[in-house]
Length: 462
Image 1: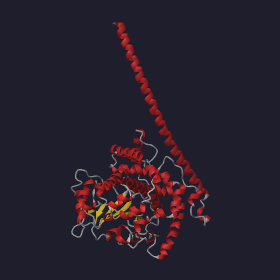
Image 2: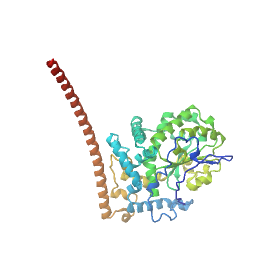
Image 3: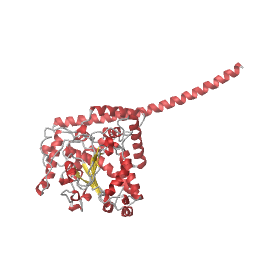
């Protein structure tokens, strides 16, 4: 499969003319004047793991029965090599950019001093996303991050994936076709919605707006905690954003009733405020005249950085999609050759590396996902057995050498020590704040006593 070298030119928005494809420089857009933001390269760009085999053809299969049968074996062999040559943590964390790392250390120190470093959701990638969102303005990024933590607590985000039983899932997908389907050429998950086929009246009968929004949040959490790590393992590089496709065939102003507007605005608010920098690019396809009228109104709500990631295309969109997505990962209704007939359609399959049992078991066994996205627990650097998950048939490949095991144990101890030091510092800060408050109270009391003594002395002098 073709593996493109990503370029970071000023991205332009294809809005369509006549047939539906005209381009306009983002910087000249009247909607972005006075509120331009820096257009950063893809969030993974600093963390690509270079490999001697980078220029060799990809081992992902081309369409065909034989390739499909051999694919799981290739993934397994790839994971074996990965487990022996690189730690999963390196692959999932990626190579940090030194400049970003220095800024994040300073930002983390600011949060720590002001008491906002709770021990959860403060990993490198989360803090980087909020810094990038606010163009590395520490004050704005801090306010946004604190609001994010407050929202998570008030909305009960951590409990939603465990507590929400979305039994109406299949019925909802019939009246709101959407889902993840495969990966792009870089390895990012692909998310697809067929907005033109949304039946909002049937949707509100199948579920409530509140439950659907909670379901959306649970899917976002699943993407952060499972889909991105699984894609990272398979691609052998850090993956932290999605490529999305919106099919807007038939969409016009009539599609956006009051319930529809409320639903889409709620989702837009959550995604932009609490899951920033997780979109790599968005293709809006089959954009007709009705949608173009709607787009003029919608784009006023989007900032310059988001607009720079959006490509609005007419019906001749296939060549644009194939530049970044292999045809085997495109559903047939978008011009690809995948039907997922065994699952009732591509948007029901949730096809992707996160469905590979060996990848999922590796993540679960090593607790890598929890370690990266919740540094407070720091429970699970991979054990020797977990690194060999799914490889019991070949004990020679499954077992680590003594030197590797020793190095692995040293890493685990160092990781635990670091986490313990951070927790100790946090407890010390809390204790120090309490002591400061106690001293302040004592000083106030002393001041009051001295004032009374002064009054008595003045009375005696009279």
